[in-house]
Length: 502
Image (tube, rainbow, N blue to C red; front, side):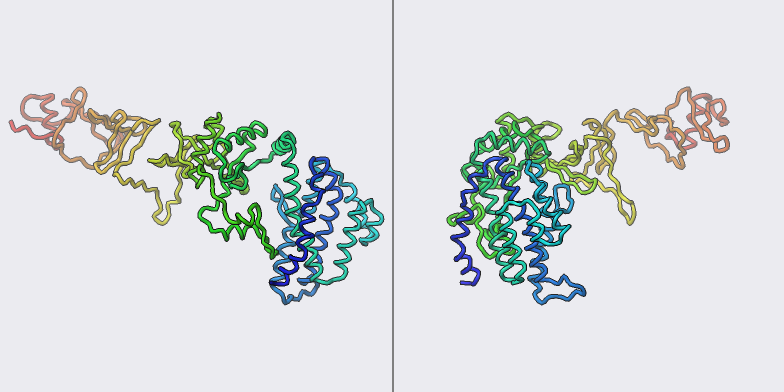
């Protein structure tokens, strides 16, 4: 048995007494918690001095700087200092845990004047003892801080580290868990008040599918879970509810053990487990993996939710700068069919762009503005449409307009092809070519060249215009018939029609 294990064994009874203290039974209302915080805030403040004392002893804070020998210790304490002194708040702004605590006190309505006066006196006097004597501090808090600074002033690193680890860091998480448990045991109305307050401040309640978080654990029913969702929506509003699996699929028990234990503690933390159930608990039958979201969707519909409600619950947003990615666990396609939860994503605040697979085909669905595909066009870059069935279809409002295939271009809608709004090709023939130059024309093997009143159009480069060629101005003489016969002979001469064998 290591020295630390021996120490933990010796203090285990005291630790249990602290965690089972009768004070937790009294922290059963906002008013009681506010009163508790008004005294506890002084312990939150002096904790930072304890941390900084360790940093001073385990790292170099002098000038000129000299590296300390224990690389692991200085890394560890600097990581702790970073988290305690410069954490990140809900707006991604750096903030200390002490300042976060003050913010929580203000939110719950606790008095912060006493700690504020004490800090001001400390700045003015520069002496902790004088500042405490001049300030109005609860006697219990004053005694606690005197002990903390006696430990700091003795400069015994192992004593400071022990007080920090076993007297503070190892106890604090379990202490707050006990406070939450006490609140949960209060009547439901109090919980509802807390949830309403959370929603009013723009907060979100995440509904975990981890068995330890579910009613009846592994045996929690789908109906029970969905009824809970419905009740919470009634209390908080649909935009303040989210669902997350908290699922480590196919991970060994060593993973959950690693997650439950802190970086700087040697004790084994069972978290929400127990000695008889230390690993991952079994998932409910209706949620074994991500496909279980389909079951949840059906369950939510059963308790009265429509597709819009379900999408509102299941939407999550990632924001970086001005860019936002919004996705939905559940998605309904434009045709009204349900889309597989594991293969869908929505982008944009209004689900403007959707990408999904309906079980048979893949879709990109654009609901706002144009769908534009851009490529820089350099180094041979381009847009390539490669269909394994050798067809590419173009549709307009769901109606097939054209098909590209191995046989060429098949015009479907109206059987027509236009340039600049003017039809050039139709199923019945060729319309007039507008502002176009035919550089070469071979003989027609079949068909005909039709023209009203036997008119042939010839482009005049000098005039930059088309001129009508009629039997009267064609300028070709010979053999009877005249008129149409003369035009036909001219077309045969140009190779535009076949020669009549007769």
